[in-house]
Image (cartoon, rainbow, N blue to C red):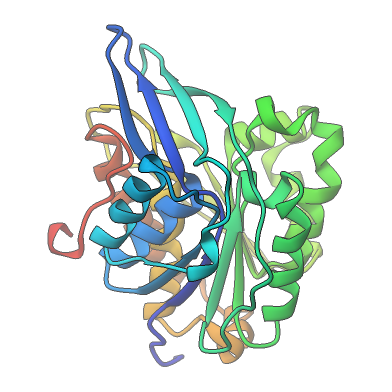
Length: 306
């Protein structure tokens, strides 16, 4: 059994303002961003999390930074370079889901991933939007020798173009990764003619040890060499789904660290992970995601709530 290696996470990606438009016409500006939510999930559960992002020294940027700091996330000093802090407008639907429009700028200053990190995570807008996207990919490649790489495509079609335009980018990140988490909605958009299992097995063949497909209230399935593990989602009254996938992703990273599957040695151990351990991890991820959707906004639970 691998020894526990608590997550020391280096997360790369957008942190922005979510302008949330409720169905009753109410508008609220809240800090958010998929990778930022992952970093907060990790930190609230007790991990050491640093976020490399792209903020401006404006009121919105300072609000985002304070939100991150309040949850224990370290904002990397190389994060300050934007002309204006990005905004995502989220239109909430009657079922609690959200549709997004973006006014976003994404780039990175020349920085390095600290070798003390045992996991590097990215995904969503940061992985594909230029000019920052290629720089993110280079950072992940540079960290492969000492850190586990995790990735969540978290597609934003309104920003990314057609599926054909982004599939190659997604596959490049899959090849770099040890763990991929993807939603059913993302797979349906990226590969409308293929089954989830077909895509997951193709991605496994590219190098990852685990490919996890989440299906909201219908649970999640983890594909691993030689098999798959499925779990059901807890039944819960949904406030909205904002941040649900991110809290699942952050918990997945945290749980892998708690069981010794992060870092250079963890990359080797991850190839040998057993189905029972995967099931335990998925159940905890689903539990955290269920708490997140039960309350408004991206507000993942603290360890004391678990």
